[in-house]
Image (cartoon, rainbow over all chains, first blue to last red; front, side, top):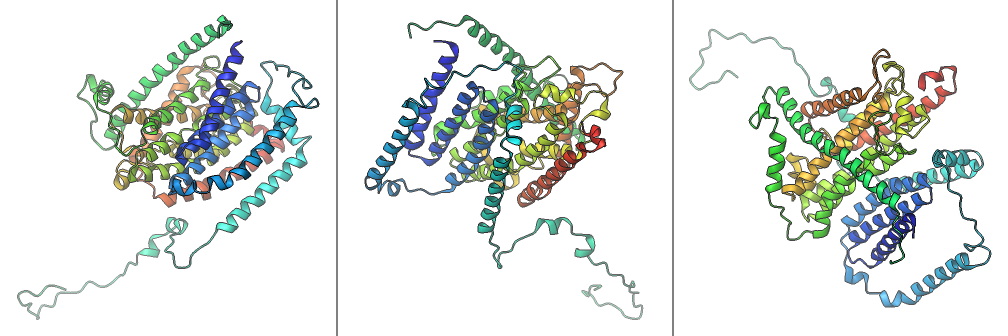
Length: 213
Length: 338
């Protein structure tokens, strides 16, 4: 067993454990954190496959952004665990069917003569100066440029749709616009009034207790 | 595993790397300690006070005394806390702050790991720092801590986007993700440093860096006047100190990254002076001074204004400037942006 194989099994064991805990952990926050661990470990495995760009992007996008928002939501939820478990036995046959289907699909890919490991040649390790990022960028912007642009447009439409669906501005809410506040000038808030100083009346004698207003 | 052959070379590599990691982390922790001293002195002078001057000559032993005090104190775990995560919080806060230092070059040869995608690595690792804050806030089972965690999560995720776009500009100018190549692309005096052609991105990066490290005036996640101490209100002793260490290690990291990407790293400002680590250190200290100066000068931002600044001001600025840089590179004046 070489050093690399030992690392692979170490990562794989953590990944499988984290994956199992995602579905068995009782607390949804713990489950989400195990999912973070699973992503991070998967990134480690990708790194071993010399796919450093994908590995780092997995951490950057999924661990650094997606899961943070996920946790954000999960932490705010008030989840009644007993209620969630009510329909467990009713849904078990359907879930079992889906998992068997998934297993058959995986077996078809990994076990068949046409797609199995024996057919695939062992990848040749690249020299130290090989830049995965550069190669990926070159491929994306030359051979696959239309597919890439199409994916970008679909994502943009999805963003616009998501914002359009959730953007509701209540008429009665006392919403403050910071932009308006920031550009406020002295003249908007303050009016300086010029007036003549009032001369003290000499003939009028002020009574005791009367103020100078 | 009886048949496992110990790979002697691998063991040697691991041991030697551990030694190098220690050689990096120990000075870093000392810098963190003295950054707290420096901060208290600077803010003291700015407020016409003296600052710490009791422990040791000129108060120089103050950070050591503070560290000892925090180590002696009891770590209290609240009874309703999620115990495992409560302890994991500070660990997850400091781990990324230290791990990112692996790829930071000090000179063109002095670096722990000179990896090709160094810039991406730094972005990915620093984006994980938010977990420490969120987990600490949630696991404390306290409303103040939870509010702090929520504020911090939204703030860090927002400013990370602006930061990432600012780095895209650097990436376009240097045409490399390797931090050493990025610095070497700026050689030839201070007029060639990227802060000039990428000036809007430099400013955005610097301010987003302040926001990312939860420093004043963006320190709403611990805003003392509103939510006591925010996410670390339930922490005491060394567990609290670890959050503190993480914040200052992150500050030095952001200062180092600003130096490497916009201020020419270890390059000297004038071509007749030799390059060297001293320039790196001076520039990092200058950026750190800015951090302290901001803290002593600006009042805390209101939360909705923080969000507006991040999403409606910084992100549009960075996107526009990326387009400008990309467009200019196609013109005969493209050399100005390299």
